[in-house]
Length: 179
Image (cartoon, rainbow, N blue to C red):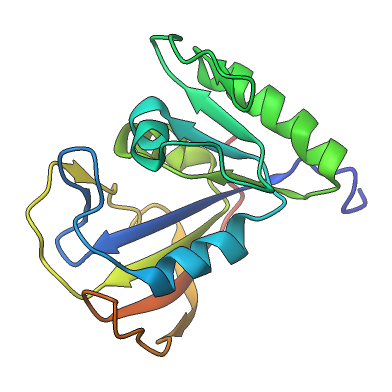
């Protein structure tokens, strides 16, 4: 099977604190311009699946990315996003969008419930590990014992406006993910 015949890989892109916090009251509990730039590089040109709360926190569709909002309440009616009520419909739409863009990846962009739901299908995790322990109410699932192996790690130069140090890690699923 050629690379173009394979279904697109699912890639989670997430910033997580040492205590696994990824959100607090509908927002990220840090300010990290360096991570936002990294997020843009990882997601540009790829379809993204995210939950309603994540979409509302961002506040808009992001340029250069197709956005699929997965929500049990499809009240988001906007021309710049596709809102769906179930994960299978989200994946089907994302696969079609990826094919039309020539992308071999679909980004899982959060939040907590969305990461938990797709964890068994995710092929790679692009993790920004934030060196902080903020209070929060949204957490990233324990993935380290779910068949992932860290493949790379680097510490980016810190922007003076970054509220905490961080490092970028890439985790790959070592076995075939369940589909």
